[in-house]
Image 1 (cartoon, one colour):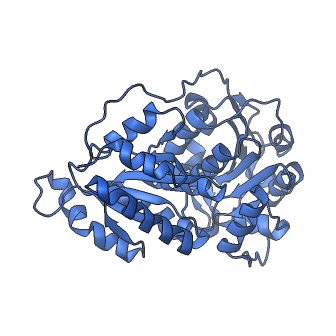
Image 2: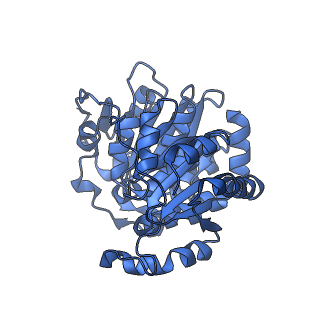
Length: 382
């Protein structure tokens, strides 16, 4: 058995100062230790996949991060691990507990994942080792993980068995207290769908309001990223081509690591619906530099314009209830000029903008690879 301090301090010496995750009793000592140390940062996520995406956003901005989860939640993290971290080459240290391990008495819901945890990591191409259960093995385990991540720029996993870490008492919550003061400003959805602005019109205004030297733009998967690229490919733009729904949590990590940059995430209604828990996390941890632009055309446009349920959802009211400090909704595209790049509006900010479906003819796909996007954004943020 080891104590939390030995591992966390060894990680700190290697630059791991940020922790994200969803609690499990096996890793509770780590979480409690990090929460109790004001020089370390812990982000309490609602979903394991979003914890991984936030850790990836921290990593692209130069902050090393650890994502912690129970193996029953590893399935929630498969999408960002395979279509965000892998293709963008964003190494994150994963600590995954092993509920349902062979020979260990556990609840029935852990039996299947317990049997396939190692195989699942291997299928994803993520190397894993047993979490060090003795103090003398901590340095070697972290050295192996560190060497692999720096060499391959890919995640590495440590799988923890029950009883590996000694108990550590929790001493405080360390979750920011949010004053729910935002009154949603609703400008009305008065235009007919065909009279609303196109996605391209909205993106053109975003480009005009996000200068390269002081802002970063994260575009969600599908037509949004492709149209942004088609309009103008800039070094401060990232096109999240997969991991649907994770763009906002990815942008959160980047914004936390770079508080001097305005971070604008361009989301879609389908993506926002997929991971609604992100609203609560952004409302709690998001800062003055975070702008969430939700382009809502009420359909899954890039798959054939099948209807989403967003026509029945008041995203503005949800954001206000989750702690966003500025919330504006409407179907007037000029609202972008009022919100994006406006430091007078407290953050985090949500602009829920209704647009019309459709895209341009012969819409291209980005020819710049995800790995190249990472490299140039790293350089810009450095």
